[in-house]
Length: 606
Image (cartoon, rainbow, N blue to C red; front, side, top):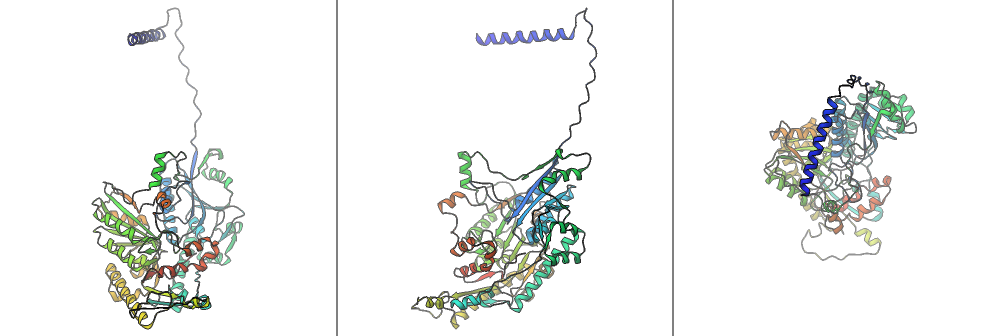
């Protein structure tokens, strides 16, 4: 009954609505017809805001995508910054981009990737400006890829050039009665020199001079080209080194003295067309991933569990496998050699095996940023890639040397950045005997042994003649394996490859000239080539970024990886300026766990 009443009521309302509508349409006879409606006044034009995207670039920018934490946003990584730049170029609502460049920790490889991405944004017709408070070599080189470089009046441009500092510990070891006993294969394999010498050998100095010459040449030419200056004027500025912002404007190294609050007015001025400062909008942290402010139980569990190591996707895809840090045959969560996490074969080899069995994976792209490490782990990773049955393309970042080159050399094509540090095809092994130091503090050791070479891995004493011969024989054999596999991968005679090896280090440009790499290019170039090998000219295959990050829950429960070593913890507690002085000490610790090392002989900072 109630429902029927509602239907009747609705009908009456509808009928009354019709009557009212009829009354409006048909006026009464004695009423004058309504006057024609006057034309509406033209509304004032609503102008769209002039929107720019601001992206902050600072820190180490690791190669792997960083996962969200419990208490903060995920850290920026190279993939995330490159993706945000790409989105800004495509976003129709964005008129330009401002890069807020802070202190950078990386090498020429990462800078080339970023400069290429900036150039891609500029090719869309959108201006890209750089804003810095202070700048060193790396920060300024990145800024020169932009259309304008801005700095406050109080800023300083520290364009000091390149400098390689190698710390030698032989004097300290003598003082402490420690006996370094190091062996190597390759005249240029100088990774042990910090422990056995008090200065560079002629071969070490020769390769360092060649690398610095090439990278210094790139620094000068890239600045000169983008700033419209002569190479001589750039070199003169570098020789001054510390340049005030005001003087930098006079030298045409930067464009304008500008504080942050003055940027909107500068954008309005450059836009013209009557744009006012109030119409300028700057989107801070454009497209930066944020953690949810409201953390429900489901979100908390998702963060704690972390991503799966490989997703069981049924879609055809290309796997992008990032290998960053020192190489070990076991877990190595922190790498003081590169600043990133380590590459352990126990984790990486199973990932490659799973990709090999997955019919939906059409190609594998390696992104390698590693100075090397364990010869065994390097070979296991190389073998897994070699037998995967998938097209493999390698892309080298800042460093892909020694073991880092080893795991790359099985790829069908190797891409390197112009400033990549690569090569170092050589072998190292040895130990530091502590018996002398122990005796100084009253500690003695008695030994009972069976077997002529039972003490070959003992850290108490140095090598006997027999032990030294056994260790050198193993190093020689590893070197033959390294050079033979490298020659096969490069389709080069072994003798020719060996002449280029001998532990010598090259830049990406130098490696291209001698045939150790195939092409200069970015990770995007390597992915494009992998698409070609996979028959994906239309770019339809999705990308699968691997390995996935670990979970905070594993870390809380102690199931992630081994804790940082005492040496690592000590170095992390030191002030930043003091850390380079003991940069090589973790190698000694690695030697206690690995018989044979494929390791870069230095860490080049600029």
